[in-house]
Amino acid sequence: MGNQLKYADRRNSPCVIIQGSDEKARGEIQIKDLVEGAKAAAAIASNQEWRETRPAQFSCREDEIVAKVREVLARHEVRWG
Image (cartoon, helix red, strand yellow):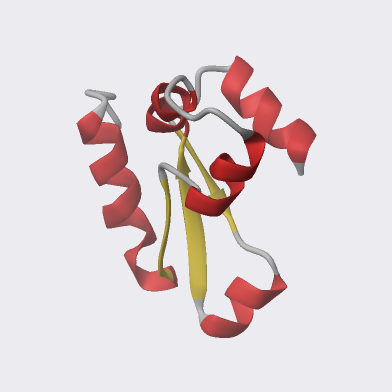
């Protein structure tokens, strides 16, 4: 999955949606805000701290996905259709 995240970052995607088998079983997804994550990375000293805090990544129910992605897009003033 790391390569897909790097690709999304290179394409300047504001966020990515992640759903592994654990999230699927709970009816959840993870949304990773790549813009906020890049900002947070500048302030985090170690890889361990990054993994423990998971800045700019949050969970939501599957039925909330559209609203939550729109919130991320609005936060970064990204227009959508």
